[in-house]
Image (tube, rainbow, N blue to C red; front, side, top):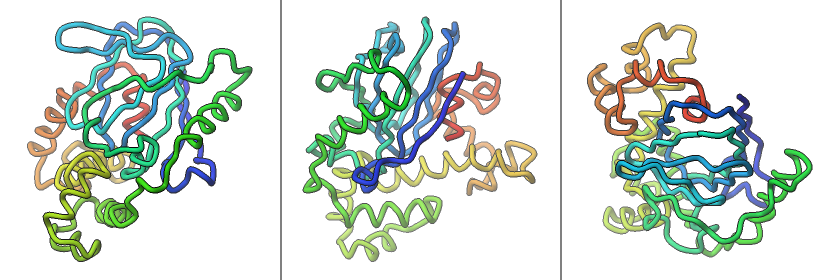
Length: 257
């Protein structure tokens, strides 16, 4: 199994957080993908993952746009996986979509004809094809720079800024801020704050002085372990212990990213 991240080309840096690659074996266990407050483009250059839809497992498209996650997403690799991903900045996706982000929240949607990554000679060529595809679609007119500043401050605060502080940063009224934030990000400020705090748990687990889930919960800004456990159920559909015991794969790679 291999997961690696690469910086976005300079032309894409205002909109793209990073590019990443994942290669892994077939597994018999479903992967739970944790929300991270960012939308992504996914390019399968090997057999696409199966996604659980209701009670069925359905193959994902070869290329898809994955909107913001607010609830559990389950994937299964019944054959070896090969993925190139584009992780957008939190408010960067509309410049690629050329539309608002909120219609795509909790959806995975096929977009156009994917580049022929399977025919690329190596990883560098695959990354170059994906970057060229994204750059060709970028339209800066759909990028809300004021909301990008608000998002940056919200992330820097680990999701702790109040609505009044966010409005002051953007110099917008609460109603206008809410509307523009949802359009640019795909979720309201309060939901993004919850996701940012939830992601902090995985970062906290890497710290040398964190020895338990309770320590991780406190480091991430939770008042207690039960609240963190509720967010695990909310965003991943499992307990912290169940997530840790799962086979390593795409889910654990992305959680640690």
